[in-house]
Length: 48
Image 1 (tube, helix red, strand yellow):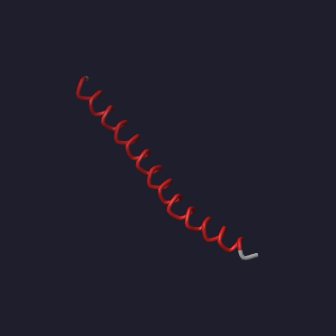
Image 2: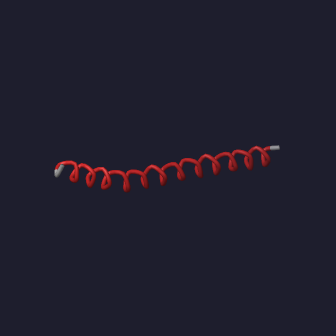
Image 3: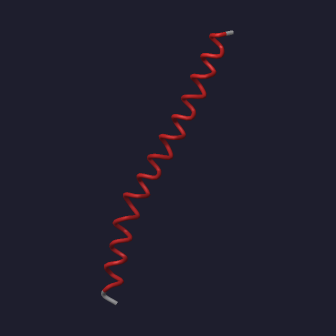
C-alpha cells in the first residue's frame, strides 16, 4: 500500500511540475515578445 501511495504522490508531483514549468515558459515567452513589441509601437507613436 505504501508503494502505491508513493507512486501516486510522485505522479501528482510530476503533473504539477509539468504545469508550473509550462506556465513559466509561456509567461516568459509572452514577456520576451510583448516588451520589445510594446516599445516599438510606443516609439512609432511618438512620430505621429
